[in-house]
Length: 112
Image 1 (cartoon, rainbow, N blue to C red):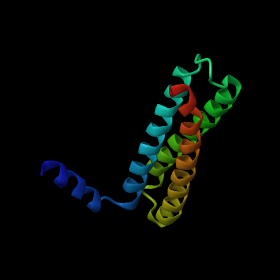
Image 2 (cartoon, one colour; image 1 turned 30 degrees about the vertical axis):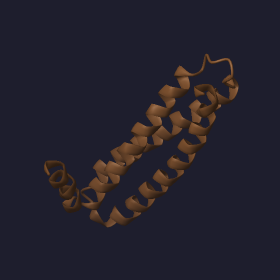
Image 3 (cartoon, rainbow, N blue to C red; image 1 turned 120 degrees about the horizontal axis):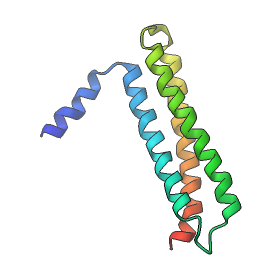
Image 4 (tube, one colour; image 1 turned 90 degrees about the horizontal axis):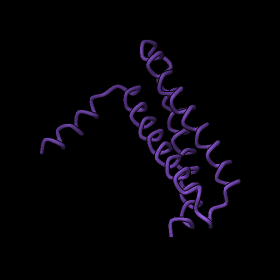
C-alpha cells in the first residue's frame, strides 16, 4: 500500500519532473545496455566492430539524455517552455527505446 501512495505522488508532480523521470529511466537503461555490451565484447560469436559502433551510439544517447535532464532543471523556472521540453523528452525516449531494442538484438547472440 505504501508503494501505491508513492506512485500516486507522481501525479501531483509538474511536467518538468515527470519528463525528467522518463529521461532518467531511459539513461539508466542505456547505461545498463552499455555495460552488457562491454561485458560481452570478448565472446567469440560477438561482432566486435559492430558492438564498438553500437557502444558509441549508446554513449551518445546517454550524453544527450543527461544534457536534456540538466536542461530541465534550468527550464523549470520558465514555464512557457514546458510543452516544448515535454515534446523533446518524449521523442528522445521513443528513439532511445528503439536504439535499445536494436542493441538488445545485437546482444542476444552472444548471450545464448
